[in-house]
Length: 379
Image (tube, rainbow, N blue to C red; front, side, top):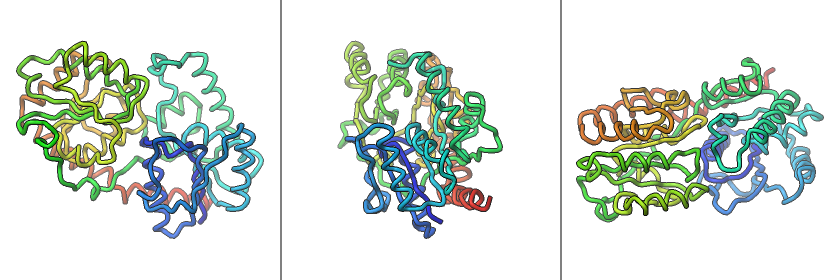
């Protein structure tokens, strides 16, 4: 079996992380793999971290769509893949434009987000006209150029069935997973990070964008009762984005500097998870949130938005409290409940581990993807 991964970039996101982990596994299964990324970013995952050699990775030239298409077509001709697996919008479009005229390979796409969520209309630079334009382009080209779809969750599958009219028979849901061994690490020393031992650490891991909702999290902090506020410290981990300036301004205006720390992009997330007490994720839309899976692997109680994709990962009132979208009052109440009750925190923590072991072990997830590839080829 020969599989070519075509992906927008190795930018530090969940789709990129999961794809690289999968292709590392395929190597171990003696699948012949090659990877093509559309562009290089300043902040990227290193393929070597996933034990993937740079010798099998190519980056398309900075060029027009047609120029990139020509370069990708050459790679396809030389590599002669049985399957091309594309990930993210631009990669999907590029492969579709070739698949329409070339039936020598099977084209499978990963669907990883609620791309056409109405919540996106509040995002800077996104208009209804633009979003509908992309949706129409996505719908037409997917009909012509894609053989099968891999949604990473049932919520994502339903979204694309509704927004693009994709037949359910052309979809196979396979959740994301994580390697539990990577989360069995030593926690950072709190005092070395200027945090007192009895402080309750709230952890948020996400890039600083409107989608991720850190603005709601900061507002919730200001609503905490004084006795709760004095017990907590919030760590925000993730690369800067369009929301960064307003987040920093809010912290300054509300004198939260001693309670909130921005750690930026980090590669030691497991150790930060291990040091923390509660994972808080106020995102406005997602695909299947891999970071919640990581929080469960680390045995953390969770607070997250009351959205369908979140509830594919967590179990409400068993390992997580949920709150209504953009409702900082409810978020503050959830934080208060967990901070003041050790028993609930401990019970939620144990249940997070149980859920991870039952649903998100990486070996099971990867085997399902391998079985899917074989099934597509057999057809």
